Length: 192
Ligand SMILES: [Ca+2]
Image (cartoon, rainbow, N blue to C red; front, side):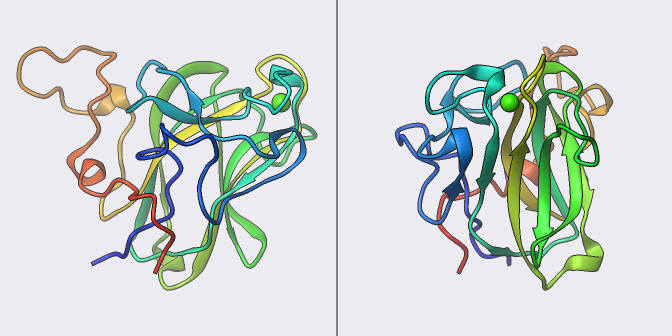
């Protein structure tokens, strides 16, 4: 089974920082998960680069980086929202997977504050050590990125609008995660 992953959010709502092993740079130095409940989010803490050390919102830039962990499953599923500024642009708001310091997977938002599932196929990276990194070099409109509930999974988490409604009362805005993801929330413990 997969070992525990470093996690910013599942158990971090009572902390003021992201936790052991996380590094924060630029305007995010010393920050932690923002306490907020976004549409589609789970729990009450979110990695959100709008939450700068001096409350400058979109103007803040820098990085938030997880501890190193081993990729042990075929997919990395996570919730993402925020600005649509891809990593390969001049001023990204991106959530990235790095191996040996290189960005090997990247995601950005949709200029939306509604969190939705995204999945990376990392089958070719199984066995590698990696870190997650939020990179914000954008100071304009929608100049922030949010991410949460990163999990290693055997299944790709589909976007909310393509998930099968569960039983009776689900709506289009239901945030119920796929079973594969709920089973493996980050534990908040650095990888072992
Ligand atoms: Ca920013």
